[in-house]
Image 1 (cartoon, rainbow, N blue to C red):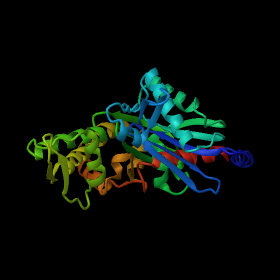
Image 2: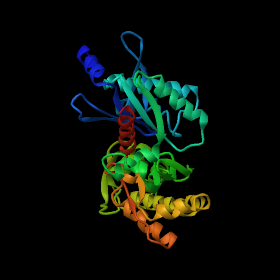
Image 3: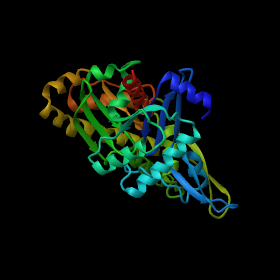
Length: 350
C-alpha cells in the first residue's frame, strides 16, 4: 500500500469490510477510495509447492491452486469452520494471501458472517483467523450468516434489522434456518443432511447411471454442471466430452441427472424447513412464527442462485404446510452475506 493510500485512510477513517469465509468460496467486499464497492471472490482453498530455484515453500490459493494442483489442493473449511489448529493455520495463511494479493485496507472495521453451528472451538478458530490477519485494526465483529445474507433482500440499507422474518440459508455445507426478531436470532436450526455438497455427489452418481457407467465425473465437475446448467425455469439438456483412458474422446448428453438431483434437494429442504424447523419455532415463539410466515421467507446461500428455486421452494412449502408461503432472495444470494456484513460494518463505523 502506498503512502497516498495510507494518508487517504487516515483522513477518511477506517474502511468498512464484509467477509464471508465459506466452505467453497470466500467473498470480501469493501468500498474503494471513490466509494465504489469492490468484491473479491475466490475458492476457499490453497496449495503449497517448492520453488524450483530457491527451494522455498510457495503458496497458491483459489482457482489457481485448484487448477494447477488438484492432487494436493486443500479446502480448509469443508465442514464450515476450521475444526482444529492445523486447519486454522492453513486458513490464516489462505486469508492473508488473499488480503495481500488484493491490497485489502488494513485500517478497517471488519464484520464477518458466521454459520449457525454449535461448534464453539470452530467458531473461536474462525475468529482467530480474522483477528490475526492484517485487516480489522479498528474493529472485528461477527453476525449470523443468514442475517447478513438477508439484509440485501430487504433494500439498500439495514431494513432487515427492524423486521420479523424467517431466513433459510442454502449453503454448500449445511442447511440453516432461523427466525429473526429485530436482529435477534431465534430457534436456530442446522442440518448437514441437506447440502449443496451432497447435491454435487448425487449429480456425479446420477451421471454415471444415466450414461450406463460410461462416464464418471468428480464432484468438482458435478458442481460446475450444477452452477452452469441447473435451472427450474428453462432447463436444457447439455453435452460434454471426456477423454477415454485408452485414447480418443467420448461425447455424451445429460438429460436428467442435474435436475433430478436439485429437485430432490428442494424436496428435502422443504421437508426440513416445514417439519423440523418451523415446529420448533412455533413451540418456542408462536407470535413470531405467525408474524414471520405472513412475510416472504428469505433464501440465501449458493443453492439459492439456481434460477426458479425460490418459486419452487415457496410452492412446495405451501403444499406441505397447507397455507400460502411466499419466498424471496437477494439479487446475488452467493454474495449477499458479505454485502450484508459490509453494510453492518459501515453502520458500526458511523
